[in-house]
Length: 409
Image 1 (tube, helix red, strand yellow):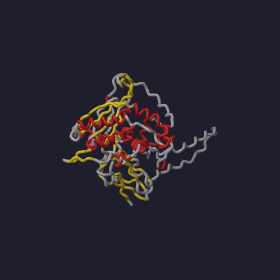
Image 2 (cartoon, helix red, strand yellow):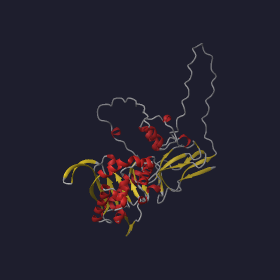
Image 3 (cartoon, helix red, strand yellow):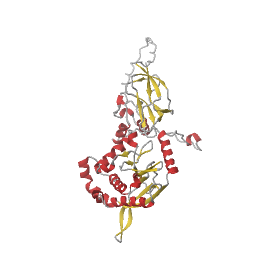
Image 4 (cartoon, one colour):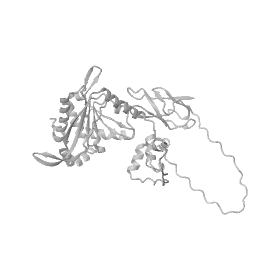
């Protein structure tokens, strides 16, 4: 009996996906819940599993095909058995002249982890780091190596085998085929490009800058980081301070937490903060829900969980939708200053940057202080310049005097 495997429901407002990769070929045996293929949506990559054991029949949607929700991806012949290769004809050995005994055959190598059935992110990491899949402890179903398995293996300090020596490059100019590499854009990358260009074409974007002295926060963090981690089981970072500072400023300047819907302005009385995360596939912005109701430990735990899910490719559609304001930390990559771009339909995004020691005038004296540039990009259709500057000043005040966050002043 042929069973249809269809495109599953992909989340609110997501109506189609692109087939990124098939893990199985027609005629191969499949087990229940075994991954058959991966689909790329505008925001995440989704694996489609077999609903029944049997043999993979006809693949209806090859790699690169755009398929709507509910479309048939392939057929599974339930209960069928994959055809085995025909046995080689038996050859009777002929008596031979006396000869030294043959060396014993080497022992069969241990079965490697099922890398072929693993996700594309895991296979890419294995290839990039020249790793032996058999050496990686697989935690996935049916011995599949997950991306988290590869990351853990690399973090343990496993040395990759040295690559084979390459022959000397020929002299003279290379052919064009060797000078360029043409790679098809992923659906996520195309969506990022479309949304960013849409933001430029639609919003009246303007950026205002300020600088913040990080000394008070750094001193507070250094003094309390160990007891904080001991009590809450999570490290105290800078992001919690900025999330709480932004929430305080959003409450005072509600226009920065608003958006345009047709001819209406929608003011949000909740604070779902997007935190930009760079991944192999591109920039994603998972959302920390109800950040105003979280303490510092809750913010750090929430951001940590979202970051791990982003790096492991496990973010859901729900994790990426509904944010009201975004924070982007380019400082982790060494950026000193930038103009972040809006994440539509939001009206504001805060850019954090690298902390640098700079000479500053403090109390009439020149002192070296740890300074960070802040940038607020905003939609001028919604937010006036006065509101944007006031918002950024409130963030600065909360960071330079973090006791304000505790007393809510």
